[in-house]
Each structure stands twice: as structure tokens, then as C-alpha cells.
Image 1 (cartoon, rainbow, N blue to C red):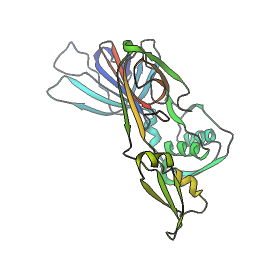
Image 2 (tube, helix red, strand yellow; image 1 turned 90 degrees about the horizontal axis):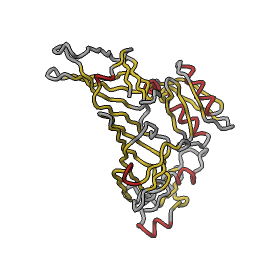
Image 3 (tube, rainbow, N blue to C red; image 1 turned 60 degrees about the vertical axis):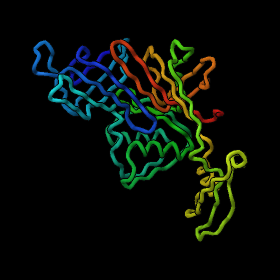
Image 4 (cartoon, one colour; image 1 turned 45 degrees about the horizontal axis):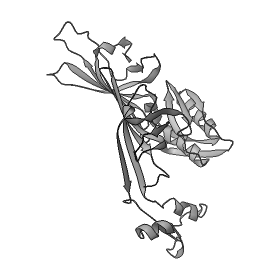
Length: 308
């Protein structure tokens, strides 16, 4: 691993590195502590102001993180300074005031061009959609809204300085087998957020019809939600079905990583005999820990369609 911050190679000063991503957050995070003191002349002094560019390369020299320092913390009694960084998706938080019309990829290009953000490979569909923001949406939300309007689930990521979009799970990150790579696995099934029946009411509160998951009602009992029709242009049944929630399955694995490929938005294949977590999964969160040559990662997995 090689770390360069504010134009200085600080690899020899860096201790433990935490590198993570989550589908619920815009930017990937990079956090580490490095030796920083005036009391020992044998330790090189490296000052990294907020806003400095920070890049990380893997052992093969491939760029894995390109971002900026967003916060720093130092104890006066200590000899280390902690630095928290975000990749360039940090700047997708800018609020937008505009109307966009075109295919999803065209809209991404338009909104990114407006803010001077480079784009890379963009997934597209031959459908024209429109997205409007009067200041309530940011750049990231505009991009998400464009694909959602076309009925497409998308993963937004950064390749260096460029914004890229792809269908989640398109790239296989790794195949994990046996105890030599999978060191732990946790599987959870919950009905805490169960909704298996939705009553559709008109704007005056009159009952129109019900949408329900009869299989779940028979197995777990009835938990009802209400959908009131406020906008006649929307498909009431489709909107009501969005409120239906079945049993939620979730899980995570901890693995000994040999590379940096297992990141949010990609897929992994798990083939560990006797485990309840076996098959193909999309990564929804990842947390890498790198220290003294040891690289471990905990992956949160998408369990949609997995039986309890």
C-alpha cells in the first residue's frame, strides 16, 4: 500500500488504515493515523491541511482512493494525528437548481458538467426522463432520480476523479471458499418491519381496495399500512405495493482479503460448506482494515430473495 497526501509520500508514517463504503453514503471513507510530532527529529514531519488531496494505491500500484482530507484530530499528549478523508463523491452534495431532460446517462453528464465534475463509464437506457430540482436535490440525488425515473437501480461510484454508474453486482469482486478466507459469518432474519396489507383510500378517506401479501399474512399475521391517494397521476396500486415489506434477511462475512476489489456495489460468490451464507451476493457495505501487512474486510450483503 502506498499513501500520498498533499503531494508527500507518507506511507512509512501511516499505521492502521480503515477504508470503507456503504450504499447509504455518497463517498467512500478513508481514515488513518500517522506519526506527527515535533519532539522526535527521527520522525519526518508531514503537514496535511484540510482540503488536501489524498490518494492510496494498492501493492500493485493501482489507484484505489482519490479524495480530500475533511477532518483531522490530534491529542497534544500523543505523537499521532488522525486524518479522515472522503473520495471525490464528497462534492456530489452540492444543491441543484435546474431542470434536466434526456436519458439517465445524459442527465448525469449535464448535472456533472454544470459543477465541473468529470464523468467516466455511465450505464444508460434508451428512455427519455426528466428531473426537476428547485434547490431541494443535490447532484447525487439528481443522478439517482434520473435512473429511478427509468425504472433502473443504479450504483454510483468514483473511478479516480470521474463519476461512474453501473448496475449493482455487475462486477464480480471475489470468490470466497472455506475457512482459509471466510473467518466469520453472521446471518439475521427479522419481521420487525413487516407490512403485509395496505388499504388504499381516496383523498376523502374512503376505502377503495386492499393490496396484500397473503402468504405473509398466513405465516406471520396481519400488519396493515394505509395509502391515501393524493395524486391522481400516480398508479395507486403500484405506490401501495411499495409499502409492502416482507421478512428481511441480512448478513455479513469477515474475510482475509488478498486485494482491494471487494467494495460496495460489486458482487461476491461465497462457497463455504455448512454455512447459511452461500451463493451470489451484492455488497451493500464494506469495511477494510489494513495494518502491518494484514488486510481484513467485513462485507454487508444483499439478501433479497434469500430464504430464512
